[in-house]
Length: 78
Image (cartoon, one colour):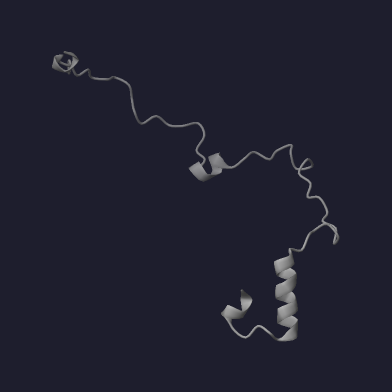
């Protein structure tokens, strides 16, 4: 059976230095930031016109209740 095979556990000493200096000494947070060089002009926030949205009927009803003074506690919201 496979389970009865012995694993060889030979240890090999390494001559490699594990504490090597990195050429780039940025922090992890700095490395994870997306590069923006050359992209500044490409990122544009489109204008939002006042007529470019939709009010849901429940929000309209809530506003009407609020204006008429019908909302006294949390149960009145439903």
